Image (cartoon, rainbow, N blue to C red; front, side, top):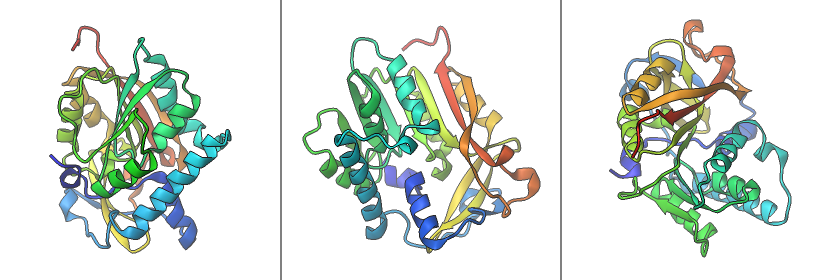
Length: 273
């Protein structure tokens, strides 16, 4: 199944901030409560527009140049962004650490990882066709980063599946989690997941200029149960760094403390490949 078919909208944190700063918009990013994903009103050109792709490419290119010059901007390595490099460093087993990054943009996670990790990596990104095309240009000649428009078949010995603020935009999130778990990674790392304490519901994301998108808020227990069926257990849970205004959501259906969650699921003992 192609990335485009399963992904109806992807909001890289850097791109979201780009538009919010441009608009001076610091209101709640979300509005309304909907039972079904397809009930949410949708408008705008989405994330394959030339302007959005160009903004993402420029951000990634600047980060690449900054790191190549030996500079390490603190905001790129602190907090939530530190989780994948730490996990990858601890997963090295005498071979390149193999990472499958669903919704990994044009390679920001790869750049952060390469900047701080001593050992080799093999980094696979699943993204929209336009993002893959730009990513391949940015990393032409690099032999350890690969871009895919669909989940790559036959990929073996995956160490880490990484999803950073992307599962929220997948209509069939349960199916996707199942397919990713079928790679039998050692770990599944969900960064900035919109986890709540009530049953899963959809809302309208409205903080991107000229765009309205459906956006899932997940009951943490549901996500845990989905992955438990595949042999994974929750071993780490911590609130993400950023606090969001949530005036557009009912009080009982807001993120706890206004923060998303960072969750690490690891393969349970006895659940070998």
